[in-house]
Image (cartoon, rainbow, N blue to C red):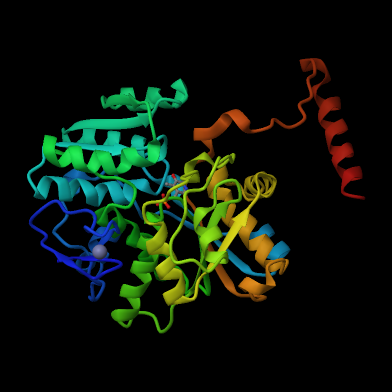
Length: 399
Ligand SMILES: *Cc1c(COP(=O)(O)O)cnc(C)c1O
Ligand SMILES: [Zn+2]
């Protein structure tokens, strides 16, 4: 049974329902089970998914590493763990949701799939569509840079550039898709959300966090991670829930704005502009659902500036991790909360265990990355050149 996250109305699983008549997203009930052993997360948490999973549809998503951040832990006075989702087959966490979404489409008898996206989700659906041998439609906004379309074409997807309101495209794709036999696995599809739960399961296999920090756009990822933890609690695998933090970019933060104004509904964010393009959705389809969740679980919502985001991206580079700006927002938010700039909305306690989700790879957004200082020399001078660098660095460190 699918249930509305707002009015509670129930819908049969036999039809491709994705949203309630009231306009809000649908969700599957909480699963309660016991994990077992297995090489992959899908095997270990078998009892937490709505249907049997077919390994042939997989590209190896999930089971990403959780890396302890030494320098940032010290700087921030917390135990910081980074969930490295750049390790997925198309370099973002979207693959976990696409994997389950494809099962749903096939279960309902669809032979075509699609999505509405400008970036990571498009690549993910195109790749999994190719893997499953399904005709795949990717609807993009007409302003998308050519560069981003190349990978999609390589996967063999059918790309359609659509002129017009991008927010409306989400709803229209669902409607037309049902008519034309295309299952659109959009950002907060109920089954995509089911796939995202695996992030929570993997975290809990390694550490019991006090805080989980989630870069948020449509709200699908946040809903999935929270649902995962709620199921772990229902199944008595954890005693209490961590504190969840929604992070948005200041230049496009409709959820944080409504949260701070204590509103129950989000409003369209006017003239969005941020470097974190992957989380630049002015009208998130799960925005209200995220607000309801934040209230229920007493979560936090933090918005960070482009400057703070780029600083955080560089700090992650010094931990050996290269993420895109959207994925660095978590670290920027932790810094902000630790500095207690937002006392009213809560803070992060000293020495607590904090997990930040590194949602996608930096290689996808190379254009804005600044190069460092580069020295050149002749082969004959190499030794001298290296010595010069060493001395310069020692003097910089104050030796
Ligand atoms: C999609 C995406 C997000 C946000 O996920 P939502 O489910 O839309 O909230 C965050 N970071 C990256 C890199 C993404 O691709
Ligand atoms: Zn409803």
